[in-house]
Structure formats: C-alpha cells, structure tokens
View (cartoon, rainbow, N blue to C red):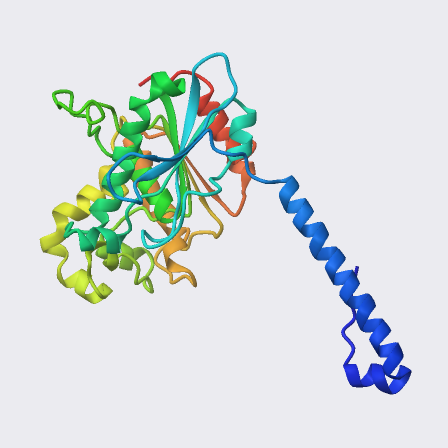
Length: 327
C-alpha cells in the first residue's frame, strides 16, 4: 500500500472540514490496523525461549549466558555466540542462526561479558583483557556443563560480529588456556573451538597494521585504555606483548581450526574505508598469514558464494559441527 502525503490545508480547501475529519479518521484507522498486524506478526516469529536463561559463569552481573538446547536423543554440537558492540555495548539476546541451529540439532549459547569500562573500573590492564578472559571462561564453563546439558564438547563452534567476531577468532587461534592441574574444574576445561564463523571481524590490534591496512582507522586504542590512535602508536613498543597476545593475526598457527570470515564490502588493502572497523581490509590483511600457515579458511566479501565451498554461511557451520572434531 502506498500512502500519498497531502498537506492538510489542501484537503480542507478541497473538501471542507467534515470531509477532512473523515479522511483523517480513516487514515488513523489504517495506520492502527497496520501497527496491530505488525505486532501480531512480531509475536508469531518470537525467538525461542532459552532452556536456561541468565546462567552465571562468574561473579560480575554481566558474566551470564543463555542456553538453548536442541531436541535430540544424543549429545549435540553447540554454537557459542559472542555479541558485538566494540566491547562497549551490546547484549546476548538474538544470537545469529539461532532458529537454524535448533532446527538442525545444534544447541546454542549466547554470552554477556564485561565491557571495557567495567574492566577499567576493576583495574584490569589492558581493559580488553577482561572482555576476552570472560569469553574464555564462559566457554570453559559451558564445557563443564557438557554432561548435564548433553553437549559434545569436541564440537563447539564460535560465532560473533565485529568485536564479537574478533573474540571468536581470538578463541579459535589462541593456544588452549586449560590448566589440567587447577583445583577449579572449570579452569581445567579447554578454550579451543572446532571452527569459527565471524562477521566483519577486526583481525589485529597492532596500531601499525591498523594504519597500514586502513589509513583512516582510529579504532583499537580504547582496548588498551588509550584516548587516541596517536597515543596507541606512541606506546606500541611497550604494549607489543599484549598486542601479540590479543591479535588474531599474531596468533595464527598450523593447528588452528577452520574459519569463515564475512565482510559486506570488498577489500582495498591500504585504502581508507567509510566504516574502518568493519573494512574488508581486515580479511585481506590476514589472508596471506592463514594461507602460509595452512589454516583452512574462507573469506566471503559481499555475499560472493560463487567462490565459496559452502552454499551459504550456515552451510559452513552445519558441515563443521555435523561430524566429530578431529581435535
């Protein structure tokens, strides 16, 4: 339906006051009907209710997760979802692929975690460490619940967008943080993933790489509690140990799991981009490192499925989570 906007004075001059009131009444009724129908439709496609909601994996109020259990008479693989928001905002509600996962026998966990201001308030230095530590701890907690929640802990794949995609990629590439000798049973669990699907992820926190790949980028300094990219560059040498600890690019190794990176824009490495934190240059920047290490990877730019091994993005998850991991 197309509604033509007509100035009120035109209606009044043409039809008089009573006619104008009838038209306005009918218009209001039509808008009300549309809004009511929209609400009914929204309710009819409501998200599945979590099997377990706001489960605490730590003492902070943001250290909580939701769990959706797929219907199965066997243990199920699991999608571990991390929301984006620059480590500054966001929520675990509405994880990607939720309905598709449940339809295909894949359980889902979506986590909240401490943001950079929360970590800074707790004097965690650099503050992004708090965000990444939370994701690792949440993954270990989920594995500790494998028997109770009927999860196959060898088939857990990561997923997230933007900073959430970065964190999923960091988990995929980081050496296992499990501590077999810990008195804490959760800490004894693995932090490794069997695959990761990441939407517009940043792939480095090295300010020199950030500037070389995307010259107009100013994103990343906040992860280290710094106010500007120039300060980040000036302090790079003193931060290099942490930069290498946190950057997926620096962590790439031959034993890393398969990854799929999705960007909604083509790469132009070394050129500015209108939305620097989500530039396809992050994909182009890490590709040679993945290739050299022999990591199985796909990078999809602008829904270009002709060059992909899988028919769609979910096809990657289905293939990698549908069989036991070799890990």
